[in-house]
Length: 158
Image 1: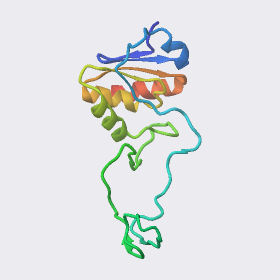
Image 2 (image 1 turned 90 degrees about the horizontal axis):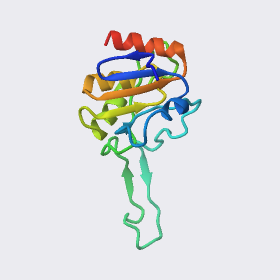
Image 3 (image 1 turned 120 degrees about the horizontal axis):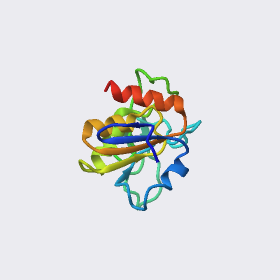
């Protein structure tokens, strides 16, 4: 299997990810970071109560809230496993660019230097760029040759 593009740390394969991934042995990758194609983001919704006054009207004596107490919800909270990033700037010719900070945070959180990271929907190459910056080896697959060219250009000018 010949890569479409190669760097010192990574390889890009142009083609269907299911076909390409079958070429690798089981347990070959240390981490998978990817953003599959989608048309709507079903996991994200606006927090309609942030900063607003909530009235508690409970008749339950076991409730941890005081009866008829008012509370203003917090503007901030401890960072959880649901991360929110502002995506702005160039999209490098791809309609749904993966936020660089999101890829960075996942790779830093879940891998070590020299680990092998897979992105089977590499898109515009964000995961590969993050791996290069963080000294992780990477393998990416992308079905679109147009996007493979974008990945190659982004990596050449990182």
